[in-house]
Image (tube, rainbow, N blue to C red):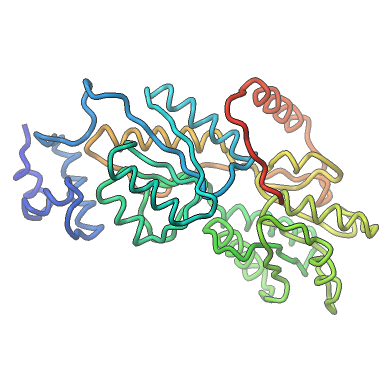
Length: 360
């Protein structure tokens, strides 16, 4: 059986360093930490007094924490979380902190005091350095969002590439002036979408013009003001990339009020493939996130981190789908119609949590 000395020799570090990595105490560089974990895995080392769950321990518990009110798009994610929790015999708790950073910190304090074994952030106000500090003593993960530089287990999609694909689609349809409707909040996913927008323009030899960026709020209903802003330009956009379907739907309604022909005269892309993407005319071109799979995966990986010596603290990007629909000149396919119908039927059977809509 391997010893801690064997691990130290294999990783070319001191025994004290191995101990700090296992106990999550004291400063250790990410490179050294990785070498130690690789040595542990290679040598199949098990600490004699591991603080991981043993077979006779009580059930593991996970708190799922939302930064604000629970959105309808979280329904599928929570279905995945629930199913994975059942499969792994994990108790679940839910809470949201009403955009209150003090309340969010209180839930983390509860985690530190053992009221929960782990915490899933469905978005967070903590910075990377703060999350790294929490991770030293607690099991945490992010779902649907990431925090740049945090090195925390995170399950999401490649938002930059997804946005790049949508904007490239608009460019391939002949649009050269593309407006982007985004948010003042510097949420990681929104920033990544903006980066994808920029990269698509640059790679197609077009300038990135900051006047084509409109920064609003997640919960805004001022689409007439947005349209007035873009219409006042010497060269208004002929296409729009919106960071969410709800924004895109509200903007579409405003354009229709002013008799624009969407999908022909103008093109619009949304994001998320939420209910609003197919709740009216036109059907929105959008990115479908695998919400259920993300929820299932984050519980699966977090449970593994709680019950084994080797921990995973990487960003896991799951595959997404790109649906081209009427809002950019496409039509909905028979396969997609069938998928939508099956998803709706499954959702109606789920029951469970009541999801509070955030006004968009």
